[in-house]
Image 1 (cartoon, rainbow, N blue to C red):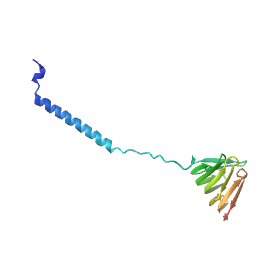
Image 2 (image 1 turned 30 degrees about the vertical axis):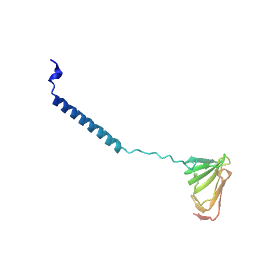
Image 3 (image 1 turned 180 degrees about the vertical axis):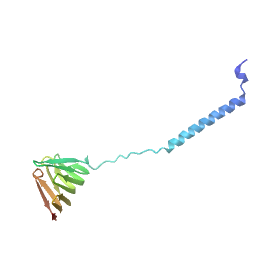
Image 4 (image 1 turned 120 degrees about the vertical axis):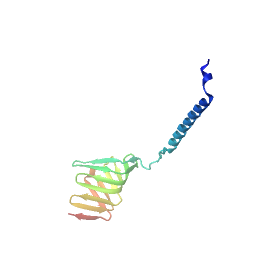
Length: 149
C-alpha cells in the first residue's frame, strides 16, 4: 500500500496552518525591526570656505610663528583670508583675532578686526595689526590699549 494514503488530512492541514502562522510571525517581526531602524540621513552641506582649519607658518631667523584658523578662503594665488578664531603663536607671544589676510609668498599678515596680543611682559588690545619683515615687525593700529608688567 501507499504510505500517503495513511496520512491523516486533518493533521496535514493543521501542520500547514502552523507553518504558515510561524512564517507570518517571522515576516511581521522582521518588518517591525526594519521599520524601527533609523535611517541616518547625511546632509550634503556646501561649505562657504576653501580650506577647513588651515595651518600656516611664518619663518624668520629667530623663531617660527604658527597660524591656525577655523576656515580660510583663497583671495588670489598668494593671499588667503583666514576667519574664525585666528591665532598666531610663537615661543614669545600669541595674537588672537577673527579675520586676517595672510600673504603666503611675502610671509605677511594684516588684520582690521579687534586683536589681542599677549606676551610674557605685555598685553595689547588693538583694532588691528600688520605683521611684516617675516614676522620680525608687528605694527598695531587703531584704538590700542597696552599693559606692561
